[in-house]
Length: 451
Image (cartoon, rainbow, N blue to C red; front, side, top):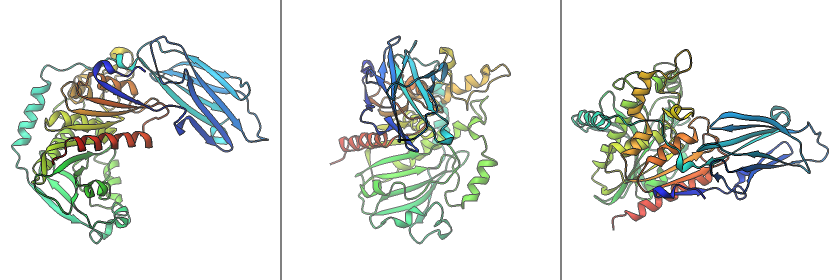
């Protein structure tokens, strides 16, 4: 297995035989897709095959051969069709450079009773190098803004949340809370004073708690405009953890559903692209500084053990988790699941790159001002400066947060690290990957537990 051990990493690889994702079922059809040899990591120019088996219910018409598209780092490198032999077929492939190769196959029309499936492999992933370069003043830039933030008094307002509060939200963001036993926890909506706007989140903690005894966890949101929901971390609070789940935008968590929809189509429409020609105007500057202030809030709580501080998030939340681990040296571990905003300059190595921070000109070339700005908000550069424990997940067919960009950040990260491969997964996390995240965090919390 090629697993990045040269840098101290561990790979948790999901075996295609054991993974239920290997088999796709639809309308009386069963399509199994895997690899031969039976693994998901290969070397450059090492030949392998995608192998598949299609089973049909008796009497079902045969619409013809299986069609496939073969892609390397999401660029099409082949499109053909394969005739089935005893319900089976193979597709030969090899990766010509470090990166990812995946196949998309379809039998019949998936919209009219057919079936489709996808599977990817990593090609020498530990050799993927980022195109993003480190600015000489990266640390100075962030130190300046951290100093600005530190000058703002750490003031917080608490609004209690329970089964009786906020009845206007009982059919929306508080609906799932009504089914939870809250006898062992306390939950508040907490607004913390920040720079451009307040930090906004839900603070869950054990009802019975002691000064200096509890680990703390900051949770950060994926992309979109929505409230933080108060039921999300009741279990963790029951287990003695102080959990602050932040809203990504510093907006209220206590509004009706239409309020968020209006924001998403109005003032916050396209927020991820706002200010991308100037680092001082980038929307991500405020977002990442709010992450730092959320960590400030947790570490100011008298119940915090002063020892264990973790941050977790997926997609946009993964980007925030990486930024927070850099901005707050007291962070002891982070989990970045299918993280966004990594390696915006991947085009330098012929790979596609994240779209939100990089603007293209009329000919499709990256606009230089946006490339320069992106360097200050790129997960690759945060990872170059971070040394705590880190856990990643990566989807091999992810077209939103491309797997090569995730690995570009993973490879430059020098802290203790683990990555979970998801060969059949696009922009999501499988139950097995989520279990691995929980196991990583549980192991870390146990290892740093105050006696």
